[in-house]
Image (cartoon, rainbow, N blue to C red; front, top):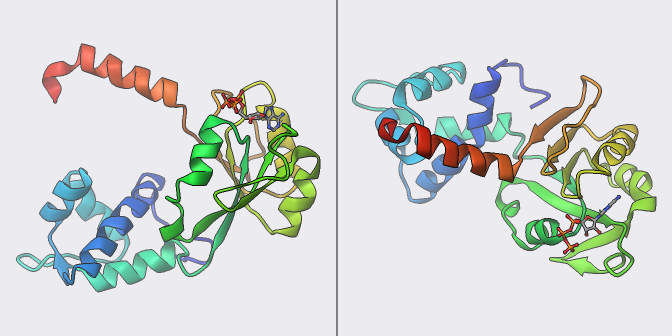
Length: 214
Ligand code: ATP
């Protein structure tokens, strides 16, 4: 997104990959246009939000016609830097980390887990889902040599901050944090937290307390 001149709101930016995936499917099934109502039903975002989001992309849907799928795809590809492969490091090859290495969800959107790291000697030197597992001692060297800018953190919470500090020194730009630890980083580093336990608890809370608003 670095060389994209259009500044779009963060909430809109977060929905881009969702729109992109759906439009790619539409495109491969030969569809050339889509209405905001169809999109809304498919991605579960209300159509007013979709129209507002798309107006930032310069895509103005026409009444009775909808949006041009090719135009939108071109925009998303450029904006999401789909022409450029983003290499990702995974730190912590436990149950969750191993699942990510085996699950090739990253293959179709030009991000690839290139290397993994762990302290466990029985894992170091092995390959999981084609990804080599390196020792943590080599973290900075491997990250810098492979020009890796994004990391997925799947270690236990206690070492998470110290590992993050090392990644910051190795010039990592973004971290997808699956640990419950709240990490402190310089303002230039972007962190997205995915705390599965908290998300699940919050879902259960909403079901119990707001059941009729569904
Ligand atoms: P497992 O059953 O393999 O231990 P787990 O997901 O239950 O998996 P966790 O204790 O959450 O285990 O640890 C996740 C992974 O993080 C493990 O592979 C562990 O070796 C690794 N790990 C622990 N501490 C560090 C660290 N300081 N640096 C890198 N990896 C670490």
